[in-house]
Amino acid sequence: MRKKIVAGNWKMNTLPAEGIKLAKEVISKSGKVPGEVELIIIPPFTHLTEIAKLTSGTRVGVGTQNCAQWKSGAYTGEVSAAMIQALGAGYVIIGHSERREYFGETSTQLLEKIRIALEHQLTPIYCCGEKLIEREAGNHFAVVKQQIEESLFPLEANEMASVVIAYEPVWAIGTGKTATSDQAQEMHQHIRQLLIQRYGAELANEISILYGGSCKPSNAAEIFSKPDVDGGLIGGASLVADDFIAIAKSF
Ligand code: PGA
Image 1 (cartoon, rainbow, N blue to C red):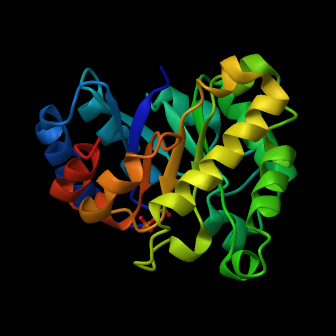
Image 2 (cartoon, rainbow, N blue to C red):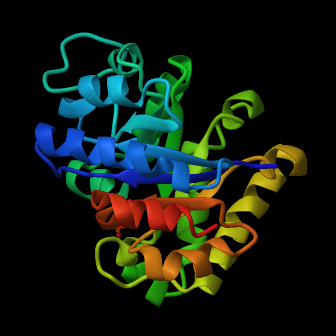
Image 3 (tube, rainbow, N blue to C red):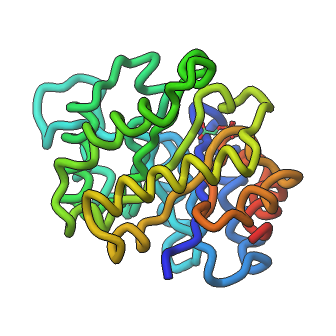
């Protein structure tokens, strides 16, 4: 059975004290969520040291929103996978659409980031998804296929087995406009089909595919009820502990 995962991407929000307070609240309320659901919080880098100490020994995992594609060296402003691992994080978001859009991250770079994350025992949460213009042109399946082919398919099966995928239609991120549960399901099924062709059904059926984009307590149950939706990557709603927990309880 593949894992059910609900991960909160805090993006560039909360000052350290606020983040610590939010993490404590999530940890203290995590008991309300069924045990089989993996809970992950993904704060800004600056909070990681403290939050990793808080989550250690609890059921809540912690990750980061990015990592460098290089091991170490003269890369001013970058944070390495080794540093993230050393602080106790277990996950790293790779290829969020905001990184692709504002920081020009390319498929090749993302593949390098995934590889270096895996080398440091971090689970990459690889994001893919089409823009509104691509959906309106009917190209959404082709766009996502290309993203998956370029950044994931060079991976060996044993590497792919440790990757989590998040389908996040760009037009649904932070807009309040969610994909319908049917739109989510058909894209998740498409992604799983691609994985079956490349890696075989056994592995493809073990890979968790999360939905992201304006997921909230009022729509999570409907989206999570679909057979190929294995959880959510939550932005805005993860900044309110009660909402994040309510979403995770929606399974
Ligand atoms: P949102 O963000 O839930 O605020 O739409 C999701 C994401 O970007 O991961």
